[in-house]
Length: 142
Image 1: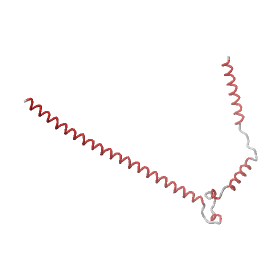
Image 2 (image 1 turned 120 degrees about the horizontal axis):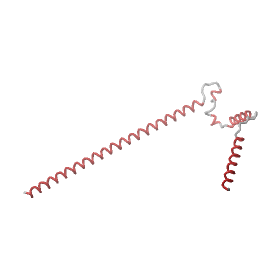
Image 3 (image 1 turned 180 degrees about the horizontal axis):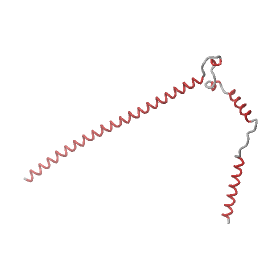
């Protein structure tokens, strides 16, 4: 019976939790003064920004006087330079890795050829030794 009661209590708690969640997540209309408060907060944030943060976000002094140009152009140029440097770095990295792989392969090929030459020399020595042994055995057989 205790298990049955625990299950019923757990189900009751889950149902109660779901009901509270439905109430909490129920769509409600925004208060009428919300828009005014948000706009006022945004305006105060604009005023509070430091001059260095406004450098890339607002018109330059020359633009305020009527001259063409915005500081956002400097930001775009800086981003372009950064992107070009990043792409250049990736290209150099790829070339270095490719060169290293090619160098490693050529080194392995040289080592393989050297090992092949050693095996060929060992086989020649073995062949000559077996020929001498064969001659020696044939001399003793006669």
